[in-house]
Length: 133
Image (cartoon, rainbow, N blue to C red):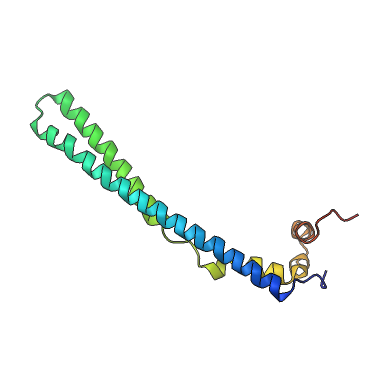
């Protein structure tokens, strides 16, 4: 197993692939955050109409219906704002996220030496294309 190590070129290509995927996910997260912010702004506009009607309403049932609708829209807006805030930044930096993967690719035998059967089995599955006899 100690002899099973990829070339520097393979490690470079792998790192580039990880970086490309990371960048794509970041862009996707930023797009999602922008979409959530736009939807929250639309909800702000939707709240204005029932709010104006609420001021003019005199019927208690109508007032209750408007208050319920405004409360529901405000909850939706809060959820969207939380999603926008939480999805724009990654939980951990790139180096930390892919450090273990790169360590495994550089020397898979080290993970196999941990003594944990599940990790040893994982190393064999990820290292060899076919089942070992």
